Length: 314
Image (cartoon, rainbow, N blue to C red; front, side, top):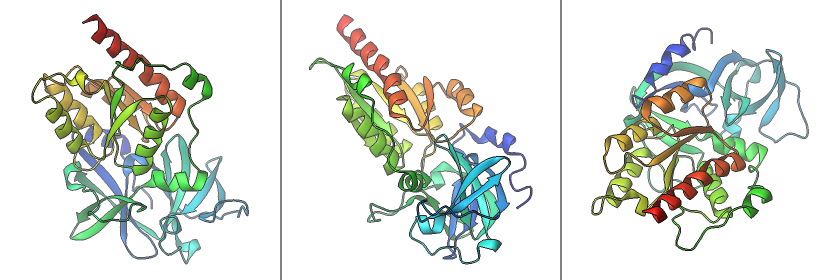
């Protein structure tokens, strides 16, 4: 698929404007699917693959691509859809997220579309809780499903590591200290990972699956007394989310006088220096790539302690 990703550097201008670009592709079932362009490094015809018999069943093999050994996953099989039938005619979308690089085998790649995050919706209510689809939208009157690729990778490589015993043993809170965090992420796998890490150190959290709902909750918390730090010490937010992305959520928090001092940590599977730049532009306090339990906990502990110290002094 030559030139389909040309000019990706210019696409960073979409960030912070509640817009995204999706690379559209089809699987063996004929359905139309999408992945955020910022997760895509390149698209290639499927190279010759070496089978690794000990690998997960959805890993069709490995190949050397640009001097890197790459695992190629049949993403259709991974989401319980039909497997690719003609491997030699398929394409591989090479992706980078969650600190790793992998290839997703698809039947064909179509095009890139520019959309607004508010046009990206959560799956309909009643969707299977084990669904691999974390959002849907429409392009030219056709349903596009966004695959929860974090879910796919988690099932292939297994659950991420627990918080180290050294960190857990160093944490203690007074009963009267506030240690409640708002976690915002559209991936149920990511919400579970974060919640589990926080639980291990005794930190409570409220989880939301999109930025718009999270902002509404924050405003509801401060509608009477206007003191957000009586409710939570910080927000941990994903960047890619239906209806309102993490950058826009951060900007909206900074615009509200009642919320503007709230600590916001952006926690995303997306890679790239533009994230660091956008943290400053939208007013977030910190960016951490997913997912390291120890790194996340190490980042939030000073914030929890700092808020509680300030509250006691007041």
